[in-house]
Image 1 (tube, rainbow, N blue to C red):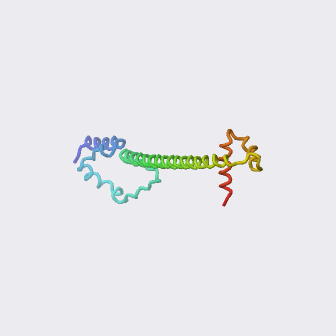
Image 2 (image 1 turned 135 degrees about the horizontal axis):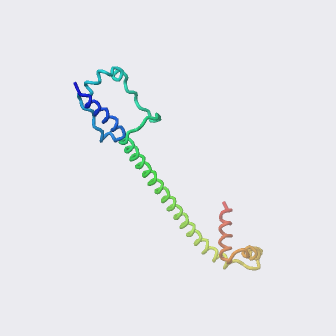
Image 3 (image 1 turned 90 degrees about the horizontal axis):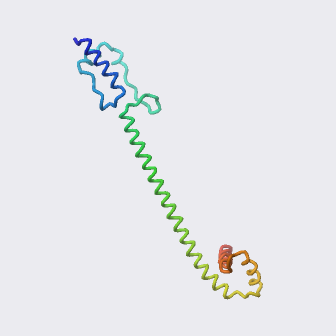
Length: 154
């Protein structure tokens, strides 16, 4: 039979290791479990219930570490995906801006040609002179006018 000092040491060790991660915990001596499990008949009769994630049971430090690692990996993955989406959005915006600039160049060339052929004393020429007053240049006014004409035509 074990001495009281051995039993007290095992109990003390059990309570001290509750705060340490499972990897650092030392199991009680095998003969301690064999000698004392017979004195606890209910402990052997109650099956352990599966733990649900919403239950407020304390989690050991090793489980905390694993969960923290998984959470960090998931957050990093989300950040990476978000950065990819932002980059794709920037690239799409850049492509659209380049397309607008190309279209503007095409309209600029058409506007120059249109201004050459515009008769200033015609009804359209007089109207355009008044329209162009709100613009910094007649070319800018002609570009906007031709774009508007193109958008309204089917």
